[in-house]
Length: 111
Image (cartoon, rainbow, N blue to C red; front, side, top):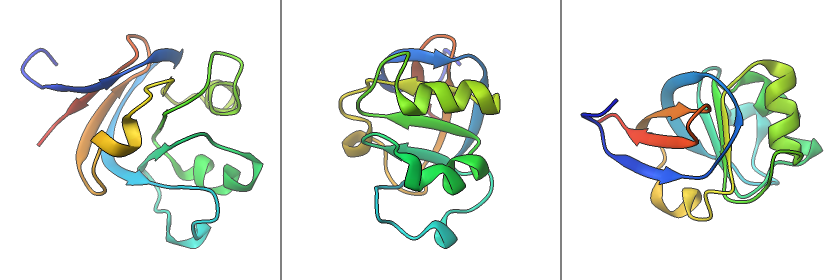
């Protein structure tokens, strides 16, 4: 991972590493359009987003702490999660291949 650039960093919320295409997904977005294996990037998840979270390879949020909605659900689902990036939704682009390191709290550009 040292060859790849860190896009954003935040608080590690659920350990693990996942790579995939980023998907900016905000409350009210169509659940049907979220594809299996995408990385969910959002301001903060809420219960209306659970169906998308189930399909996600990892979660990155601008807000939150270790007891926030994305942190708790990602640990329950066993997927990596980084919260409190503050700027994830503005720095990460839709369709960009990223790697999420939930142990370090870092998100890397892979393309």
